[in-house]
Amino acid sequence: TIPSLSETFYDYFPIGAAIEPHQISNETSELLIKHVNMLVAENVMKPDAIQPTEGNFNWEPTDRIIEFAKEHNMEVRFHTLVWHSQVGDWFFKDEDGYPMIDEENAEKREQNKQLLLERLKTHVTTIVERYKDDISSWDVVNEVVEPQDEDGMRASEWYQITGTEYIETAFYAAREAGGPDIKLYLNDYGTDHPKKRNIIYDLVSELLEKGVPIDGIGHQTHIDIHGPTIASIMESINKFNELGLDNIITELDMSIYAWDDHQDFGNEIPLEILNKQAERYEALFHEFVENQDKISEVVFWGMADDHTWLHSFPVERTNAPLLFDFNHQPKPAFWSVVNIVRDE
Ligand code: G3I
Image 1 (cartoon, rainbow, N blue to C red):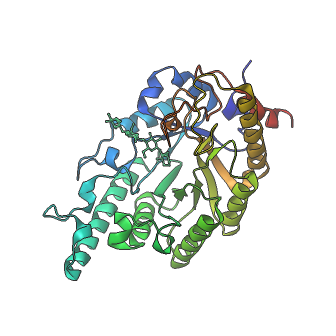
Image 2: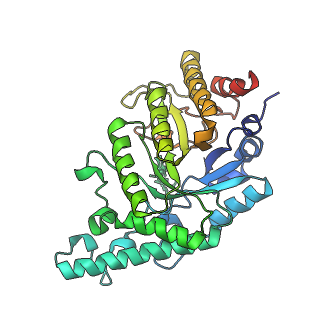
């Protein structure tokens, strides 16, 4: 018989999966009910989905996910209050519909900045007030750091208009609306990368010193069967743990290709590749289990290989990054992961 993933890791951390709302009413729901005790929305909680135009909030998809989660004793995490991508243009236009970013007049620029921060505050406050009792952890900001941009901060419209104030405003507003018990995270990819890790570390240290309420770091952990090293992933977990922060693995998946690999296995993935993937997942979960006191949630970016963003990113090719295959059957990686705990 096939053991349940979330029951297997029950004493260690919740196991989550990212989903689209339609998946809770198709065959994927069976896998979800059996194997995870946490859900996150793959898209519908993002700014452009939840507040497509100013003042018009689309709650229905998020409500539906929360309702399903409650019915099945699952927690829900929120992704994401702020992002530079998947965010309505309206945020960044002044009252006359003119792009704030093009404004040259200093006084008007300052007014625009205040208007943007006001809109951000309303966005965060409205959402957190509605869902504060339903959400176990919040991605407050996503991908705010970019080592290739000047001074290491992503040169998004948020940053160009407000500097790092948008980050502070988002965390303060979330805390104010949700109270002391809600858990607030800064989420990013490539956090294992030394340069990026250091930029995040410096940013967060500075914000914490100012009193900005940050509870932890979300590590997306979109990796592949070749890299990065598991040691580098754990180095980041340790570094933020030493700063007194919690860590969440927020978007785990493992591409079977290298980034610039142009082959495509189609639906016939060689066993050798699946075994390599299993070995790496095993090594990774071994570390997660050993370091369970530093990691509070482990969330996959999807449930089974039939639905994953990696089929079309960075190029179109059939990918297989998760623990369940195209037919929802457990892969070698599933068994290598559950056996870590079963063997103990
Ligand atoms: O909603 C439209 C729909 O109306 C339209 O018909 C359809 C046609 O292409 O597109 C739909 O939007 C797509 C959206 O997903 C919802 O399905 C976008 O094209 C597509 O680009 C978008 O991709 C999402 C991506 O974020 C956007 O950046 C992926 O599903 C989602 O898995 C991915 O998730 C991100 C995390 O939020 C942050 N970390 C990285 C991760 C992977 O990129």
